[in-house]
Image (cartoon, rainbow, N blue to C red; front, side):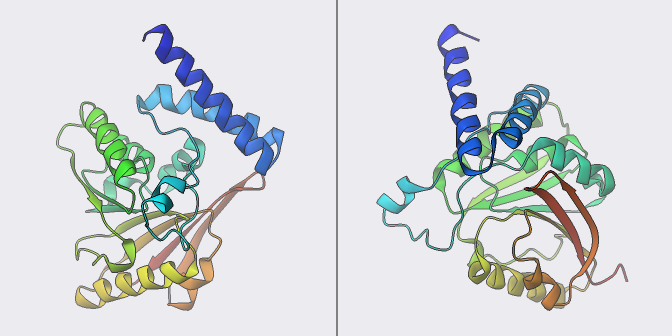
Length: 232
């Protein structure tokens, strides 16, 4: 790695640290920064950073229902994937995939078929690059990155594992849950939904999903796992 690359990476880490410290607090920022440095090195990808989507807004894209881009913490992903191994899913779907962190970690945990969807073309390009790097460590990995609005995306009938890191508000989430229910109705099966930073968990539970797992570390690092249907 060149000196310029090292400097840019350091600047990126510091910028992310102060962003989290300003919006949350310094103790959480320090904890997350350590996880970022460790995780990016371990998985060989580049996903650190926060993005308030201003560039999308300047292009005329409606971001009123979207949340800012922040990647889920590596330790939260590893904790939940230890409990719900991605290798057991036939098709793992990341809704609001951002730069692809959850997909890359899922692949390293054994997921063989992965799809990511995001409404930012720039994020999809970054996710494609990170997944290409990950595939070098994961023989047989099949992945697709889709640039689209999740509200209108038809959930494939073989998807049985879904990941979300609070990518949008309850308005869009209600539409996404409707797509999940439609897919389940077409082909009844057990669908496992991993929902990090679950601010609108009730949208899932009101639709009939059952919460089966909850984990929280510090104030803002939280994940729930919900299930829809059964294996019959």
